[in-house]
Amino acid sequence: MLMAHPAVLTNLIEQYETLRILHAEEGSLEVRQRMDDVAYTLCVSTGMRDVDAALVAARHQLPGARPQDDSLLTA
Image (cartoon, rainbow, N blue to C red; front, side):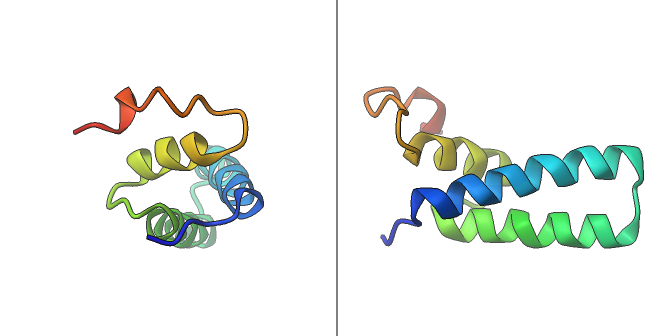
């Protein structure tokens, strides 16, 4: 499987978290659509089917992550 560059993953995580906050505050259609787009890209970039699992996987792939601890990825 191809792996996304850590800078790309960091950017996607930051975008998703920002959009989640905006969606909670505004709830606009544009924010929801962008959030869905970023979630899809995160899933594709990590090989996951669920955005929560994709976020865990993306964080796991970042520099400084503990590569021995994959307990959150088993399911």
